[in-house]
Image (cartoon, rainbow, N blue to C red; front, side, top):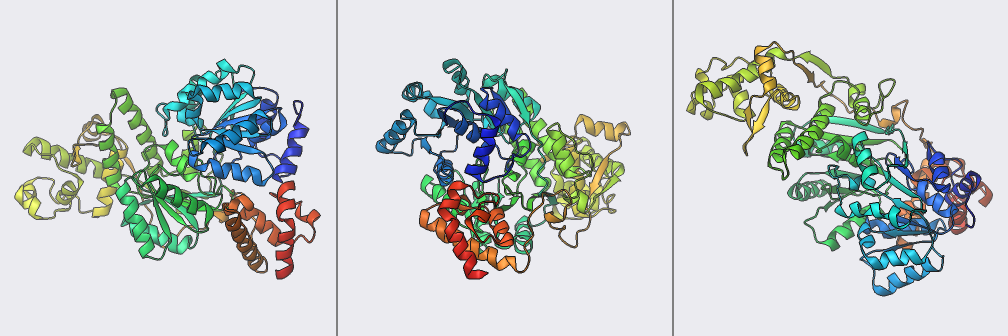
Length: 612
């Protein structure tokens, strides 16, 4: 676009190319800083508009913006989306043949690309470095920058090489972006990418349109099915499982129950993974059941729910994964089923993990923070934001703790009874058992195992009849979460900790969370006063919206594009509500830029003429 641009140029590009009236949050400050040649480290939640923070400076500054992204499987979609709005974009990665690569290289050297996407490993190839030397680079954007953090949730060794960018091209501004990072991770990113002099921009991590819910596990498959059938029928969503076997099992279970679901994990061949991902991105209403191998960089805006059937290893991972819901700002659900076995399993995985004691300590710190989020009696969102060093003035009104407040109770006596049982088994019998046997002893159950080991002769036998089995399991889970009880070995046997001694012998009080009886699902996310304003369709607008969605689906199939690349739901809802009758009026709709207006405007007006 010629000479270095101004803020007014950036605003003009925002409106003309992308079809938005104004910048959101601190987008304008970031763009102004990078356009002026400054380095930036940007922390902004998924759906907050991170990509515009480098795309617009690349369009305003002379040369080509080079985007380093680990998402090879998604580069084609990212480039297609940019081309749809009239941006000249290309990519270089290992999926291309030599002819396609040469074509992109020539376009770059001829100054005919606004944006060039590269996988980080390409920058380890000297030929790529020489190519960039021969062309004009306007900026380097390092997407998913948390991949550089050694103890983050998605470390990629290739990212460590990116610190060399500044040494080779000292005058080219760099912008590193991530959707999640604690202060410690942010400092590590800055250090490892040689961005210590960069200006930091930290947006609010709040996603008010997402309703956070964490439920005790009780037949999790059935709980998931009920959630999908009652609240998210026909919606696109992601279900995360810890193991490949679980992924296959849950996907089959959903299909058997009439829900179109696909599996995704590293054990599938690359062709199947790519095909399933492409279907999820291009079709409406599919459910992807996956390990955490799936999801980074998924731009699908209409994911209405993210469900976890296993406990995430860290709050950062949980935030990143749940952030794939509701990128369009419309009401969405983040749902997690969590139980005692999750805590035991994660503790065991940490004990067996490779690495030194310091590494295991870090993993335990991550897990402790995740457990604290699960067990809090306070607002979930407040706890989540506090983890990232941010605060909220009042409860959010859009999480399960706010919608159906749990009760905190004094669990000291219950904790002492349970710890005393573990203590007596060890001291009097030299034995260690898992939670099930300990709870059977407290409830006075005369099972074969109890009789075999003569546990009915222990003084604690039958002393816990005031709580039900499920309540005792909650006590064990919360004691494990608080570090007041330990677990060891492959069979998850319970052991005492220093904290246990404080409860047993030093009168330490134990506060526990009692889950409320839930007779109905919480109110929909859109009822929250803090949720981002969304267009509510009237009865008259609903069929028009559905007809526009149908047109969008047909058009996307013809062009081989994901439907959201044509238009987001939010744009179609505004069209269905405002019913523009001319190209000029259609051009004022949010998300309808110059190129899309020219490409699709007449078709949309024709659809409206049919149904209005």
